[in-house]
Image (cartoon, rainbow, N blue to C red; front, side, top):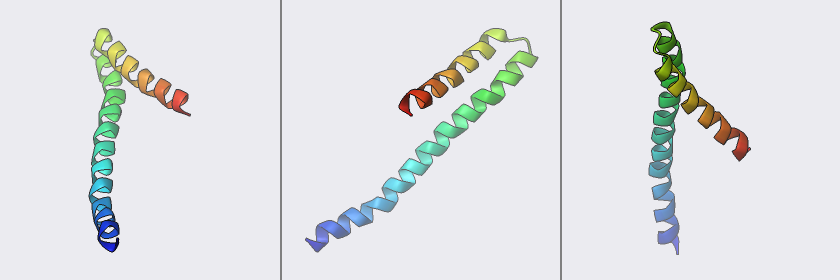
Length: 67
């Protein structure tokens, strides 16, 4: 019994680290999309700016619907 508990607790930090890394990668992607909107608009690349806006709005929609 104690061994199963120990193994579960031993796996928790690695899972937490995995979640942190994945969250950081996703956060960086969306921050890059927000920054890219300004860069693409400044360079008159309106298709790519609109594509970045759509990605960010999709994320916002998911966050709103998830509550």
